[in-house]
Image 1 (cartoon, rainbow, N blue to C red):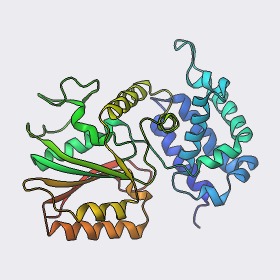
Image 2 (tube, rainbow, N blue to C red):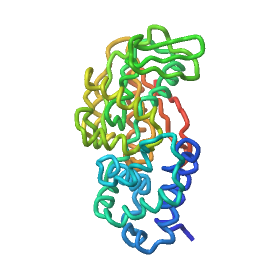
Image 3 (cartoon, rainbow, N blue to C red):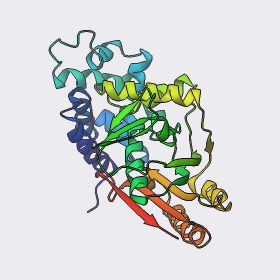
Length: 320
């Protein structure tokens, strides 16, 4: 017998909570509370019924909607739990965090139902480290970078961050953002010759609502990640890279129709977005890559889970 949408969303939230338990215990307790409520609380199960809980990443969207309400100031008691004024104070019990969250799910049901339609936007700048590792393995000098599901375009700015590996550095020496990464060094003269991205719901770094929602998809306790996001958004505002509002398949077909300049290697990159695409669109993209690879040098770098809800895996495919 197949699992119900509530059971599927509950299991997804339990996996998410397990991953956050040590680094974000208060957020994890809210996730676990919601996971249990979807199966056992008639009010919540009825309000967020089968017709919405069947959506991909529905539970994660609900928790982001709750966090967004916290960030707007609508839930001051829960905000004090998630962002305590005294960081040295004893942490609240999991029961306290979930009690306040449960009340919010009841009192702000309409807003949280609307959050189920939000695009999942979890693109923090450190994710570009996986792209850099892939580029290092390709050993190409000049790259045309095309990103699917680019969100605010922060990954496209990877050469404007500072990267430090074992015995090597790469990127902008004066960058306000520095990341330590594992893996081989990129070629010293690696250059992003062109960069472009698309997203079905791109985030403008100048839009305060969009920026707030980017933060809403990050657990409150991850203070360093929130600071990195703000620094990357400031870079994006000072050196804007336009992210087209378009579906991945349509946009990529237009990009691949143009042959790059001589000596430029095209890289199609995406991370944790593939499972959100329709299977037909996935198949169309695979066909486009094969066809374009017959015309010019082309690779795909992806950082995607092999199964939904599991850890992402870095994959590199060459089509030339």
